[in-house]
Image: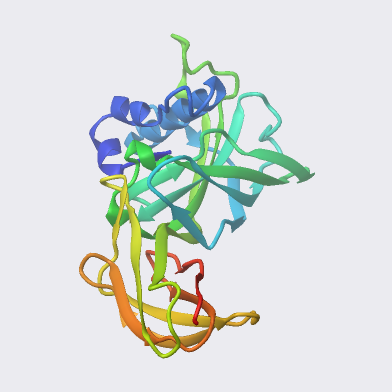
Length: 296
C-alpha cells in the first residue's frame, strides 16, 4: 500500500486516508495498524506534540532483489529483518507494532512509500533482539503506481509503542507514544512486468522455404492498467530442433515502435522457435514459449 510524500506534506488527514485500503484488501487489524502509524509519522514530522524516540534499531533487512508488478491483482513480497531494542521496550505488548516499508528517493523526503497491510510478526532471540517477518503489499489496479516508479526503492522499518494510549480516545497523549523509523536498510528494484509472444508461419512449411517469425514485446503500464508495446528493445530469436533440449541463437532483432517483432529464416528441420528478452532495470527478462514448426 502506497502513499506519496507530496500528499503527506499537505495534510495529516490526507495521509490517514492514503493508508486506508478497501475492506476486500485488508481486515480491521490492518486498517488500525496503518492509521496508527500514519498518526505517529505526522506528529513526528511536525515535532509538535511528537512521540518520543523509541529505543529501537533495525538491521539485516532482506527483500527480493526485484519485484515484478503487473496491472491488476495483489503483489505481496516478504521482508525479514532484525530488530534491536532497549530492555525497557515491551515488544510483546499488544499495542506494540513494527513493520517494513519501501521508499523511493530521499529518506527525509521520499517520492513515494510502499507499506504492508499488517504489522510484522517477531520472535525474540535474546532479551533485546528479535527476528521479524513482514510484507510489502502492492495493488497496481488501484493506481498505486505510476510508470516513473519503476526502478530502485530502498528498504526501511518502523516500530510504534502506544504504551497503553488509545489512539481513538479523547485523552490520547502522543508524547507518551514511542516511535522509531530507520531508512537505508537495503534495496530492491520495482519492475513493470513484461510479456513476450512468438508465432512462426506458415505451418507446415516445405524445407528450404521462408518462415516468417512474428511476436510482440509488451510491459505493464501502471497508469492505464494495460500492457503496452515496449519499443526499440533488442530481442533474440532462438531455435531448438525436435528431440533436443537446447536452444541456440539464430539472430537478434529490435522491437518496433509498437513493440512488434518480425523476421524471416529458412526452414531446415522440425523444431521450435522462440524470442528471448534479457530485460532492463525497469522491466524483467522474459522468454516466449516455443512455437513448433513442422518442416516437410
